[in-house]
Structure formats: structure tokens, C-alpha cells
Length: 222
Ligand code: DC
Image (spheres, rainbow, N blue to C red):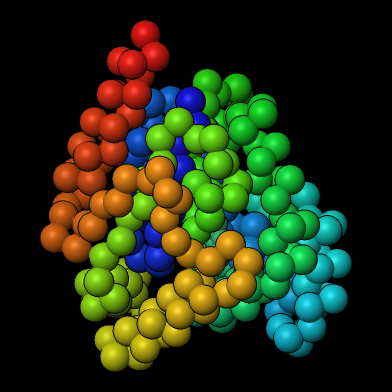
């Protein structure tokens, strides 16, 4: 079973995916990590983010264990790291270089402890369109930029990070624009994706919605 959950930032994809992965005993691949790893390595190397050749070299040499190691760095999910990831993810060659690593995961899915899993849930921007066009269940989650900025803002406050709502909203809109308008694999729902607008939902609502789709698929398979 392969499930894809795509959508813009702060739609709760990660939380929902982790809950679904646990419920259905699926391995989980947060595909934003591959771009975050390349972006962070650029920052650590002191590379100019506009240097596409440097980004490509890093992407071509990135391994799964290296990505996990980089994910422990404090800037992996910081604003600077998010910005770097967004920039490198707009480079077509970089996306191409990182595709096999994402697709190979579904051939031999494993949990974080290395034990084998029966399937995978992917989350990202293009997992239903490019990474796994043959996925069993595809979901595209969306919510208004204001709702998403409010969620991100609250996250920052909970973590004790000083933040300004208007700045968070402006960054959200800028990142959305880059993700939606890039020429390669722009953020958009797959034709056969189910769209979920969760602006007014709780996480429980979303988990129930996705579970119903998976259960329907499993019942049809049996
Ligand atoms: O989901 P995230 O915020 O961790 O993603 C980081 C960046 O990577 C974001 O700007 C979008 C990009 N991304 C992408 O282009 N394709 C994916 N499948 C996942 C993320």
C-alpha cells in the first residue's frame, strides 16, 4: 500500500502522515527532508544558494543516512533552512537527482529502526504527481494562507521562538508562490487526488477522513 499526502506548508501533512503511518503500520517518508538536506549542506558549505551546480553536486551525492544525520542539525527546520530548501527545490536538475532516492524507499520500505514495513506513506509537494504516480490513495491537503500562517505562528510561540504573525504570513505566501509556480513539478494536486481543505478541521477530523479513504481501498482489495 502506497499513500501520498501533498499540499503546501503548515497544512498538518506531517502530523497527519505520522498518525496514519502508526495506525496502518506504514513506513513514513517526509520528502521535504531531501530538499532540506541539500539546502542545509549548501548553508554549511557557505555556498551561494543561487549556485545551481553546487546544489546539484550535493544532491547527486546525498545518501539516506547523510540526510538523517543532517536532520539533527538545528538549522534543518529553521527559517534559514526552510528558505534554502525552498530555493534548491526549484532547480529541475536537483529534483531529478533526488527522485531515485525517494522512489527506492517504496521498493524496500523500513521503519526508523530498520525493520521492514508493508507499505509507505509519503508526504510532500509532488509525491502523488511525480514520485509515486501509481499510489493507491492520493490526498492533497490545502488550507487558506492565513490559517496556515496562524498555525505556524502558534508553533513558534509554543517553542518559545519570537515571531511576528505578519512576517510569518508574508513568508508563507512567498514560499507558496515559489512552490506553485516553479517549472518542474509545481505544487498541484494529482488528477486522481482527493482534495481536503482542512482550514476548519481538527487533526482528528483529518485522520478520520484519510482513514476512511484507506479503509475503502483496503476493502476493495479484499
Ligand atoms: O515540507 P517541507 O516544508 O519540509 O519542504 C521543504 C521545501 O521542499 C519546501 O519549500 C517545498 C519543497 N518540497 C518539494 O519541492 N517537493 C517535495 N516533495 C517536498 C518538499
